Image 1 (cartoon, rainbow, N blue to C red):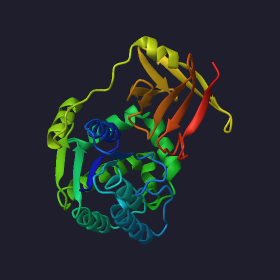
Image 2 (image 1 turned 135 degrees about the vertical axis):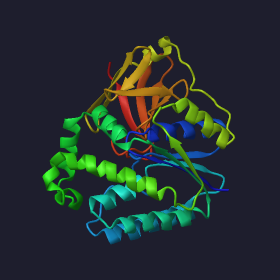
Image 3 (image 1 turned 120 degrees about the vertical axis):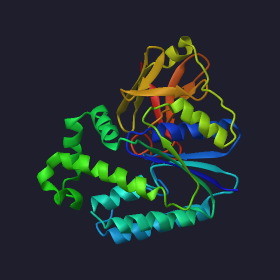
Length: 311
């Protein structure tokens, strides 16, 4: 039977990390598993380009779900974050669409999803303003708000609130939170609501393992001598792009601030990007790395993006 697990919540609530955890655990329990993160390239649901006419977006959104479910193989587990609530609601709020239209679209899609084995895990914070301010601070504070303002200030939602300036994005996040909290109680699929103000993610993970009857398998532990040999500078000739892998405090880091977590001896994953890093070795040395999983920012190729080691 098809199994689809949706992870939703306000930005910064840990959706990507939780989705990756669940995907890994299903895979390690012997299931054929796919994961779709917000940054996945060629995402079956999330569209990278928007529609000025939001009625066209609504039609397309429903049709993409319908096609995805028709094409979804049996006996496969799919874990997907930010596609059911965040993607459509953010787009339609940007257009300042009627809130009842937004609600009706999500309910309509949930009816479609209810015909499959589908489960929703929803993270919320009982003090939404506190959670949103914490998220904004973690992402750069005022500089983050200004960046978002410059990116989206021409969208109707923000044009209609010009007097607020960049603070209109605080209003946006708050309204998003209120709207999702209302809609989640009306969807037609089984829902696990997690109040995550205490950020006890190990407890939430344990609860999810019990819910899906999974045995916990931790990431493999690799000693520093193995990790050290992967540290170095790698180069993609076609893009003339260099990627540094650094060993800091017994962890590998890539793209400056992304911690790599071990999936096997020579394969690593990232929590918040659709990226797997595979190290390539010959009989004596690490010769390169191959980035797989299709991601908007790191790899858009079916066969991965190869980087040769240069130091």
